[in-house]
Structures are given as structure tokens and as C-alpha cells.
Length: 443
Image (tube, rainbow, N blue to C red; front, side):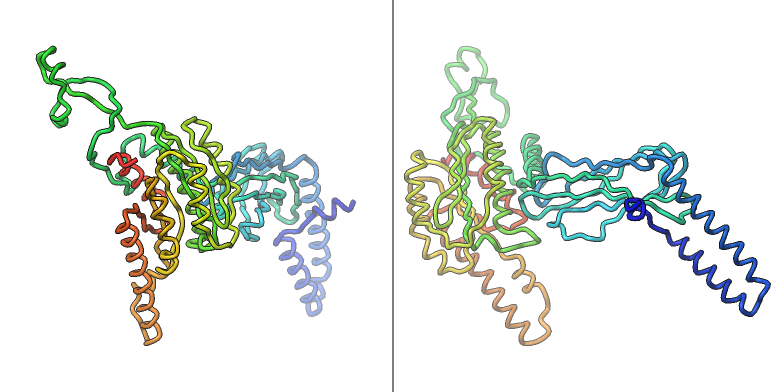
């Protein structure tokens, strides 16, 4: 009985009808003949409500289930599907309220629809997580009404589910697809002109217009009596490491994501591309100490290992120790490697404190320092100041932007490869720099 009472609700038509009955009783004070008619309406109203309730409780009614993917992709729209089946022998009006994870902070989710007798249907919606971790979905609540819409019953489906949010594998797959199809330039990745050749010989082939005449194989040309050229391929299995700063400077948010999450998403996309190029890909993180070391490997399973490590990375809000990083790199990475260092510098003084360590790392490896433009500050420079205070803020913002450019030039002046990028363009720029370094044969 208690369960029956908890599941029973009344629709708007019930209350509108009740208000109508009250008004009729009120009018019957001046029109006595209306009093008896009103009681007839009351009896009909009660009978109709009871019939409506009986119809809703007579059959199994609506059945529903939620279908989730195995994992969510951070910062990307992810599909959630709710399947429902109307087992009533009549058309039913439903309201679906899905209990979303607390991370979305959405308490007004509702979907309304009508479904024919014995019909099956699906409802899809999308959610965009902005942080990694476990997301717990609660119950699926469905309110059903007949065509009378006087009463409605609530049915709760104990469909609690847990989904893990991983770094953006959707972004990774899109960049992988474009790279394989040689359409990288469509999303901003430049085609790199090859400056030299690697020493890994592939085959001898017929000369075609556009081939480098310096690669002509004269012995093969004499033998076949036509121009033949040596064809070389990119050197493979080169050690590539992503190094992610997890210090407090990486907690800064832009468009809902922290710099750390931008770096993690980029690391996954970049690692996928380098593995496709058959390079030995690895990663590590650092702050006050060096952690999460994944040794370089070109195996296909390496991407899964890197993804699992990236899933659990958190910032520790400590000052990053570049000296400790340099010492650990000397111990763990003994061969000359390409190091993609994701960090951030907001002031020239911060860069100067770490520059000696960066120069020392760059002597043994090819170091690419990646840090971020402050896009929020840039917005101030594009608005027209309305008073002296806003003008002063704009001047400070322009000085801040200029300092970022000076820091990038300072790194380049010391022979360190540099990427100064907007957070949302990080993955594209990191892959572009990697392809450039590969093409120039700097590793």
C-alpha cells in the first residue's frame, strides 16, 4: 500500500478539474439548481480518476534501461541512450528523469514524449565531462500517463551505473584518422618540407618528376638504362617521451578544463601518432618528484598503458622541481630522445629560475618546451576601454602577452624548441612540431 501511494501522482488536468468543481460549488450558493449538477460532476470525476489509475496499474506498463559506453572521453560530447518499451495497450505519455552524476551539477534534466501501444523507442542525449574520474549515474525515473492525463505513476529503474572518464580518446582518434589520410592540413597541421634524408634505405625505384636528383643510383641506372633513385624511409623506433608538469601552475582553468587536462589530452593524441610512426613512445610526470614513468616502447599495447596512467594523474599543487627532473632524466632516459615538456610559465622570473636545467636537458636530448597563452587575458586587449581603470587593465594585459612572447624567444635563443600555444590548439601544435622535428631529422 505504501509503495502504491509513493508511486501515484496527479497530473495538471486533475487539479484543473478540481478547481472547476470548487468554482461550481461556489456558484451554487447563488444558483441553487447548480448544486445537484455539481455533485454529478464530482461523482463522474471520481469515477474517471479511478478508471485512469486502474488503467495505469493494470499492466506492466513502461520498461526502461540506460545504455552507456564503456568509457567517456574527457571534454567531448558522449552519447547516453535510454531505451523504453510501452507495454500498455494504449498510447502513453511519459516523462523521463535521469539521475545524472554529481559532476555535471544538473538537476533539471527531463525528457517528455509520447509512445504508441506496444511500441519500443529510444532517447539519446549527450553529456560533456570536464574532469577525469568515476561518474556515477543513479536511477532512471519514468512518469507514465494515459490519454486522460488525470493520474500518473512513477516507475523507478534501479539502473545505477559507473563510468570512467578517460583522457580525450575521441580527439585522439580524429587526429589519427586525419594523419593517416594525409589531411592534417585541413585542421591546421602544416605539411613539413623534408630538409634531409634519414639513413634507413627502403628500395630502388624508377625516377619520376619531383624526385631529388641527389638520390639517383647511377649503378642501377646504367644497369636498367633508365634513371633509378634510392628511396629512403623515416627512421623508426626513435625514443619519444611526453613529460607533464603536475605542479600548481597546471591547475589554471580555461573553458572548464585545467591546463593539466589539456596537456593530458594532447599527450594521448601525440602518443598515438608517434606509435603509428613506429617510434618508442613513453611518458612521465613530475612536480616535487618524478612519477608515473612509462618506459618507451613501440608495442601496440603501449597506448593502453599510457591511457591508464594518464587517467589517474592529478595535480599536487606543489612547486615543480626542474632540478629533480633533470637528475631523474639522466638516470631513466639514457639515449638521445625527443622530450615534449608540457608546463607553463606566467612570468619571466619563473623561466629564468628553470632555464639552466632546461639548457642542460637540451644538451643530451631534443627538448620541446610547451607552454600556454593566457586566452582570458587576451580578451581584455580586444575590448574598447570605457574608463581609465579598464585602460590600465588593458595595458597590463598587453604587457603580460608580450612577456609570454619574450619567454618563447628566450628559449629559442638558447637552442630549445618551443611551442607557445592556445590551450585548445595544443594537440595540433604538438603533433605539428613532432612531424617537423621528424622531417628535419633532429632526433
